[in-house]
Image (cartoon, rainbow, N blue to C red; front, top):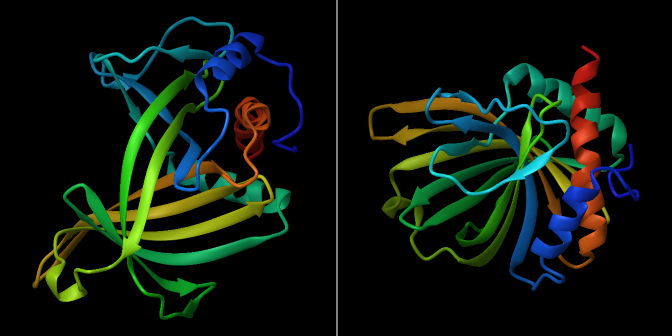
Length: 233
């Protein structure tokens, strides 16, 4: 499936996205699709409403977005994307979460150790849209953020606390990338490390080639792509 191909499905969704998404992206802006589940705080389970088509949910204090998939589905989606794209790259990234920022360091590329200067990343959320997909196992969140990347001024000896070890495979297309990431999150002290695994799937537009209507096609086609990826086990 070509995610960028023109799609006329879900015209109601297309109309809302055309109104809500930015016409252009600046060099420090990013727009991405994250896959996960819209959770109902009252039931602590996925949102359950009778709908015949995907719909955008208004922001509500009764819902939250769980931006992860199961391990089995992660494996299946990774296999699916590997058949769709010729170009891919694997990275081991260590992120240290600080107040309002994160320190990010690439340790390996395609299994080889590398020396890459760590950076400090500050991300500001501009807005997001949640899409409930009733006939898919997963829902979607579209996020638009401003990201500022600077040289690391802290140094590793001054950084301790919450860490995220990310094993990421990136599939590259001229218009977007697909990031398939196994994340081990936890706390690090002098004596022990505690890790909890999670699995994340994201599609991020190339802000140099971004076109709103093309990105809307990617959103629309991604709904079917996820269903197709999980159909055959």
